[in-house]
Length: 174
Image 1 (tube, rainbow, N blue to C red):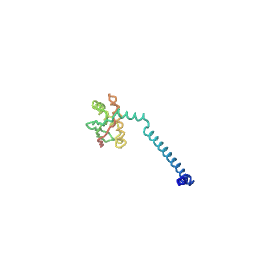
Image 2 (cartoon, one colour):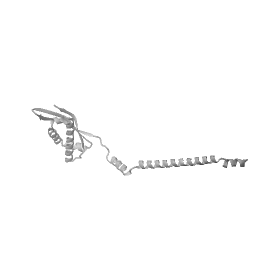
Image 3 (tube, rainbow, N blue to C red):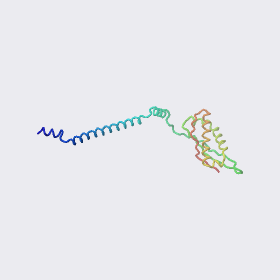
Image 4 (cartoon, rainbow, N blue to C red):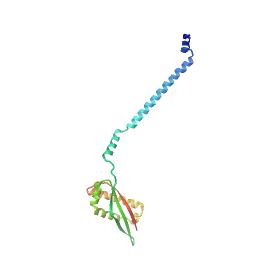
């Protein structure tokens, strides 16, 4: 009886043998495909995460070498009052100006040369067209002009060229 059972199990149904052998082949193929996909994903993650080590190292060095300093403001007091001759009428501009920088050396140069700074600002503003200054574009152009001029002045007088912005905290025209 045991021999009969062995015979039935070993070669009793040829279709069952083909199905079980085919199932094993499918399972092996699925496992191989899964391993290939996982290996590809791992390789892609490795290359994406490691990236360009030189660029990352340079960026880290730049951040470590020069931390962002807080903004500091030089308030130019008293306010500037400039007169304009517009046709037969006398017009006036009153403006409060602050200079933004992140370097103490720039503040020192601006404070030491305040008479020259004030003179240059009054001269530059006085050369502008009154009607153009009334437009938003005119104000922005004046800010950019003053920023460039003060940067040059600070650099010329021995400081660093680090005037970031000229800000108008009051701008009254009449």
